[in-house]
Every structure is written in C-alpha cells, then in structure tokens.
Length: 146
Image 1 (tube, rainbow, N blue to C red):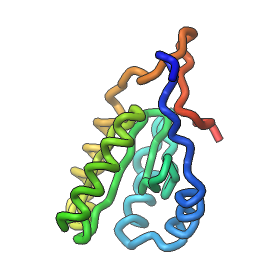
Image 2 (cartoon, helix red, strand yellow):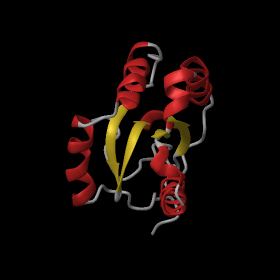
Image 3 (cartoon, one colour):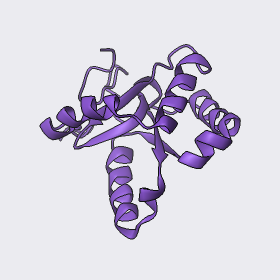
Image 4 (tube, rainbow, N blue to C red):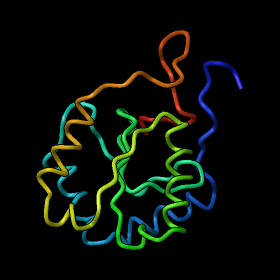
C-alpha cells in the first residue's frame, strides 16, 4: 500500500446485498432519525446516505463528505458478543478515517434535540482527509459523489 493511499474499503458483495434489504426494513427509530437528518440538518456538504455498505459492514447513516457515521443501537448491542463485534467494526471504520457517533434507540426517541445537536456539532468540526493525495484530493476507494 502506498503511503498516501487509503486502505481498500470497497463494499463486499455480501454487504452490498444486505444494504438494500436493510433500507427496506428500517426500524421506526431509524426512520425517525433519517427524516430529521434530511429535514432538520440540511447544511452545505451534509448529504447523508442510509444503510450504506462500507467494506464488509453496512452502516446506519453516513455523511461521506464529513467522514461521519451515525449508528442507532437497539438493545441487542448490549450483549458481550455484540460489544466485541461493534468494537471490531468501529476499529475497521476508524482505520478508514471515519468518525462514529452511536445513539441508543431511547435517545433518538426521547432526546432527539440533544442527538441532533451532537450530530450538528460533529458536522461543524472539520477533520483532515486521512489519506490525502499529494494534490490534496484524497479518496476512500469509492466515488464519494455518486
């Protein structure tokens, strides 16, 4: 791997196949946050995608321009097995230059304004491109404008 190239994070066939299924079966909590991400947080350069495949994983929401992933966690994320999986998943995504915000279903359903404030603050914080090209373009192994 070249010093200025991002590690390969091309979506795996399995993750690509899972993403549309997950988009069609979003939970009520995910639907609620999705609506607010589109209606209440529209700022320049904050286009969010939902249930997007990145490498072998499908993330709940991602703003590629800001390298920000938002995860909405239900009760199933509290098990030891799920915590280990989430830690491995987060390490993989962070190695690709992403920041990750996690919110519980309860937070999204009962404390939405603080959740949105946290997301807004993360979007307002700019971070350098993790693997900039010598020309300053930088990319993450896939077209971030499509």
